[in-house]
Length: 477
Image (cartoon, rainbow, N blue to C red; front, side, top):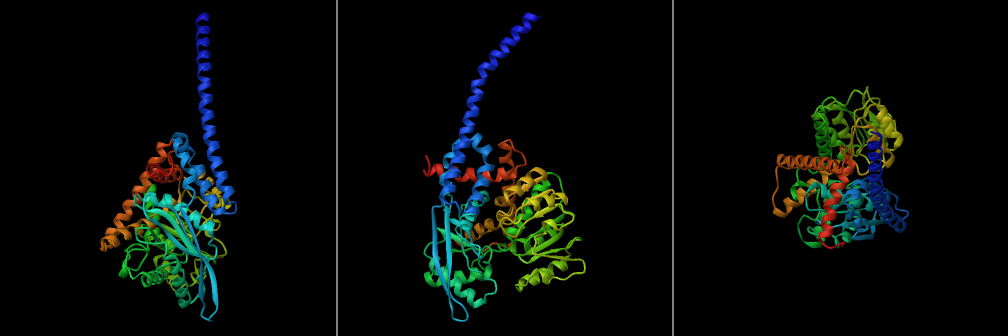
């Protein structure tokens, strides 16, 4: 017996000795992959060391895609190319105020990646807009657009112009000046901008009117247009509706009913407004809304009448602090995340980096189990770590807020065909697109042995689609 055991141990040791070099080789190869990914990031960082928003977006994608690079190392070769915009356009925008004084703003358009279709992404008018902001937004847009399944590349643009407290005439003059330069670089089959923060239906109308004056053409060069001149039904609602649809699909996938769940929403613009509208129709209890001045908390949930009052206030460009209710609490200068007492779902719909680690921890402490990002990159990396570790699911913006650009893609299709689809038709297509995004995101995460890591699933699915096309078109060998 002892002789047999010694022989077995000897064989076992011999097998281990033979296997060790192979294990070490695999580990070394993985370390080299990690080193090469880090090296690419360091090179990107060295080129633009002060572009913190762009670098944050790139780092988030790189870090989340580690399992993809481990399983399919060929994709590492594309990292540098996919992070460099095809072109960046920066231009001067002079305009005259109502007192006759001339002002100068900067305009931007980043045409980031057009391998699967015309560049597609919104225009943002906000004083914080700079090259880093439009690059981060354009980079995110590449993968978001790919997830929709529609043929759209990634782009973004805007200006550091602040439309707040400007008259309609001043905004018109600015839009006309902005489009006079931008018109040289866009087209229905080249680059199709849309709205974003500070650019709503009025501004899109002003921009489109100037483009027509310059070109004498009427084609789908912008989306988010008014329905009477080529826009699509459901487009204003699409981002907010899509956010609720995909969140509901994720809940149904784990047999949870959204009815009666307490939902904290930030923002009071298009995304937040239509998100809340759809939540109320599904029977959820919405407990917060906000704007840059602060948050309104209704711990018992907004009634339809109370929500309509907020919509009326924002429709006349008022501030959310004007909302009055005997049951409401207004908190100046804060988003709702540390103020709400009990919450099941958090849907940030305001702006980038609005939720930090402390906010995320406060939400979890208040009972939050589900998070869907309505704004672009609203959670810091530290906040995302909290959500992924302590919530049942976290749906990143690339997937969660893709409804807006999806219906923009449908608007482009309607313009090309010279048709207008019904509200029901567009809404059904939006639902199907969001269902497909959820399924793709979930299944991609499973393929990478990371079930329920929707951040990985969304990033990997969008990345793979774009990367495979870049390989096919010879952008990287």
